Length: 118
Image (cartoon, rainbow, N blue to C red; front, side):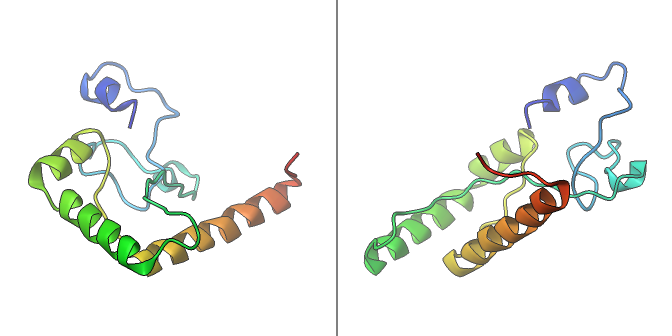
């Protein structure tokens, strides 16, 4: 998202620039995906709200509802999209499953490359 202003400003496109997403970004329709440039890679940055283990259910429900309400606000969605993001609110279960799948995915990449945490 930090390079979005440079893309919008025009100028010379550098050959290494591509979206690491499944499909082209709506805000940059002329920017190819990595797959289109010969690199079948998808990598997403994401943000989410998490709470400590043991947080009481009523608090989790209240946080989830409040976050969904904020993300449904047109001005919030507009700003996130202007920054190059997408708005895809996940419920707790879907978000937990996504985090777990990302851990498995990137551990597999690290293992394949022989990378180890220090």
